Image (cartoon, one colour):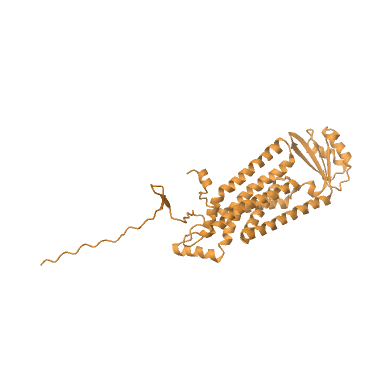
Length: 367
């Protein structure tokens, strides 16, 4: 049977619990790189978060250093100058703090003169620092409320340890996304915040799908069946793997279209800010639900006396180390039914054949 068919039937034998430690180390390295970049470079926060003034216009083929030299005497201070590509046209964006002493109209005229553009081609935007702080506070409050509601829901629907595992997965996805933005230097805008909240929703969906199957399969954990909690977790992950992949692929295709066609071809920078965070977060969420959240739940549950005792009993019965948590598990709950030639279904059982030796008949005594 091919891999595609086995994925569709949930009959794969991928050993997730065997590689979770290596996956955790890989995630830790990625997060550490992101945190180091965050501490050194920080985030490229947009004007909506920091406040300030900005001008944007066609570059006219003029470089960043030439523009900086041309506006140096206007009192913009340490202005940030970026080149952007929108709709196949190269544009330049100049950002400065709100306390800059430059005259807005004078800067617009000078930029138009340097680039050879019309004064009407220059777009000006100003955001006060209080507005930027308000946007930041609302984003943080929305994230906190979101996490609290998810914790309450998962704890009531399943249990607190499942909620804790999902929260760790969400924190993983959040740190990976923030780290990627810090390393890449992409601008963080309100659209980025909206996309981060969206990917957290996708990550939670993946986790709940897996944990619902785990909750259903918990009854299989038994020393008599030789199934530990980690074995059951592997079984559940393989059974839900196709659904998780379908969810991720179906979501990634339109997001990739937004990123490639919307931002790179049509030049809609807002779509790029929204789609890139979504793409990173979706891929990270699919990874964390399989290799971070679910294995963490298995580790936490196997510390409980009930499941620790199951593992000890299996070890004692086999007289060796407990089988690896990721070993394939085949569970049969009912006897196999076979169809008779008449169309009715009969249950077949195998009766052991006697293995004793029949003694020889005694000889007759001679008279």
